[in-house]
Length: 412
Ligand SMILES: Cc1ncc(COP(=O)(O)O)c(C=O)c1O
Image 1 (cartoon, rainbow, N blue to C red):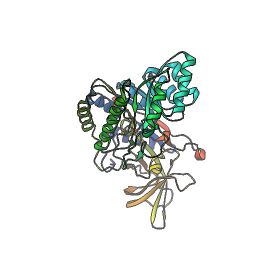
Image 2: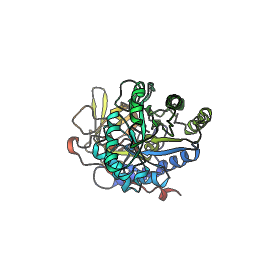
Image 3: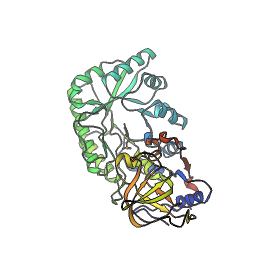
Image 4: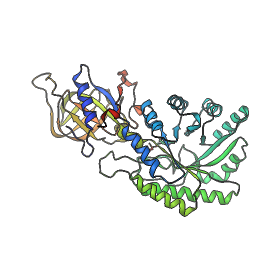
């Protein structure tokens, strides 16, 4: 049995890897078991304050198994950011009125699809988009519920990725609201329903995300005071719940978030409104493992270089964010290639893939007890932003298989 430093590789995942490693061919695949995602959604639905709706941000993992997990676990719907995502969500069983459409640069075709099919809300990212959508609605003789995405004047400094504060391509700057909001309110085919303010992604500190909620609530009050005919009936906080990639032992605490938000809703007198979370990473990360065979181990100027079958073409996230994911080694006792081959033993090493770029890094300075050629490197927390944000076409390696395990089989 191999262990990550704080998360163990579940035994059914390990058995599947061993089984596949014993078969012929080079192992390089994702293994998914969506049980953790289902449990997380069900838990959030149970603990979150009344009026809060949990959506799955499918950009984290658009595989049908993840969409099915969201459907089965009663997520209210899916946050989409392209027509491709819309199509996949509908194929998975979500009706268009369960889709909320966010993201800058929605094309006229994408907006037309949204109007014709009746998505739940379109989240306006600019004045151009508001006018474009209004015109499409007019031509179709329809109205559309919209939220206004705001690039708030604050950010969360420590977050892995920030979406507001400073000059951003997301939403309309908070300072421009006095000019923009009256224009949007005047567009007769748009029904203004509220605000969308997504501060940051990958946040582990509940206090930081609650601070975002508080600032959004303040903004809501300010807007409603300035425009007596406006009610922000829906407030969308975006995504952002983090996962403990660095294995600090400090996971995001959803109960603390739920309690803090419930108290804030009461304090502001915001009962009866709708609140939206569009979560990606937190829901999907621990439902996936990237498993790749070690093809070569060599020593280069004092450090071992471990070369795997898949690199950033299949799992780009560690390189993109300069972090190591939890990593475990499944030992296979593969036959030796030649007597002089070296192995890894109690040392810090580099893991890379087969691509012809030094950017092809899977992990660096990671301490490994034992690894041999033929063993399988297993990267945990790879269910979110794994294959979907990788450079799949670079060097034209085959696409890794995505293996879906039926978690029920392993319940007993
Ligand atoms: C508009 C929007 N909503 C939700 C998400 C999901 O964020 P996270 O994975 O941090 O929950 C993203 C991520 O980029 C996003 O852009």
